[in-house]
Image 1 (tube, helix red, strand yellow):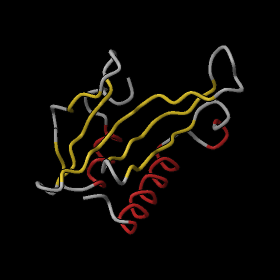
Image 2 (cartoon, rainbow, N blue to C red; image 1 turned 90 degrees about the horizontal axis):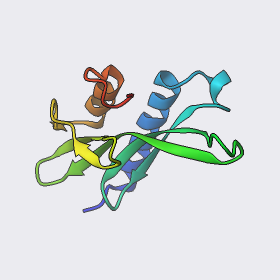
Image 3 (tube, rainbow, N blue to C red; image 1 turned 60 degrees about the horizontal axis):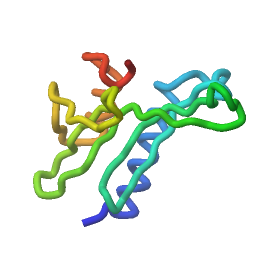
Image 4 (cartoon, rainbow, N blue to C red; image 1 turned 135 degrees about the vertical axis):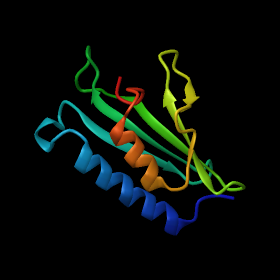
Length: 117
């Protein structure tokens, strides 16, 4: 079952607020900012950094920060981080959460340094 339009808009608002409040300040947005994507069909949300490509500054590059996937049967969110090998890996210290707000709090705290290097 896909994420509803109502939930999608709510998640986008939460993610937008998170990126504005916790991400780089506006005066750095030409060099670094945070973005997000909500995929209603896959029931996932993803946070990523956006920065200019080092050899071609006019080209933007996205680097993953964190990902959460909603599991309808369990009514929770699975949390993932991007390993150095380029694969999403379940975040073992806290593999699932009850809400997207808890996911954003977990990412912000970054207790184990997995999300922000």
